[in-house]
Length: 190
Image (cartoon, rainbow, N blue to C red):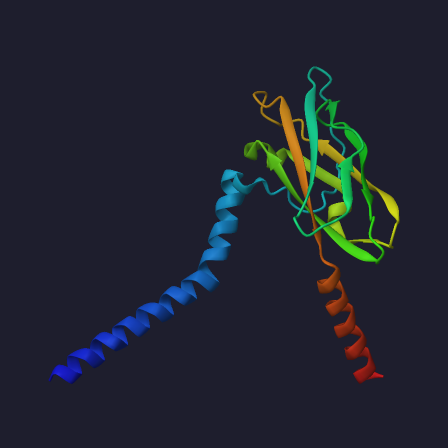
């Protein structure tokens, strides 16, 4: 009788552990994404935005600040060409970030954006951004990385300053693995 009670308890604990694993893998990520989308938390700026004609609100100016940082393993030089601009909501604005690879090897970088205040994320639209693609710089090479954005005219009037921050990561090994896998697949096919 004692063995049956232990077996039932073990089965219940295993079922609980399995259900927690399923929840963490399949249920939690979509819930987290929905929560971030609704609340604007996490500063996600979204993907590429297709511009539509809109009236420019010349009655106000919004300051957009730019910040650049590197992940601890990224040796590149990386900075905005200007630290801030003033834009009228609805107006398309162009700027560039500057990147340089001071190493003696070719590298691949990927920039991840974040935006504050969080509630402004849904009103900040990137129509062109270096963050949409991985950046390849040869040893000693430098590049201007373009950014084109529009601050939506519906941005709440209480928001006067938006800070767009990019963190640059070294993804050279991951890029090489992906390229090697594609080459191996094409060799098998051909």
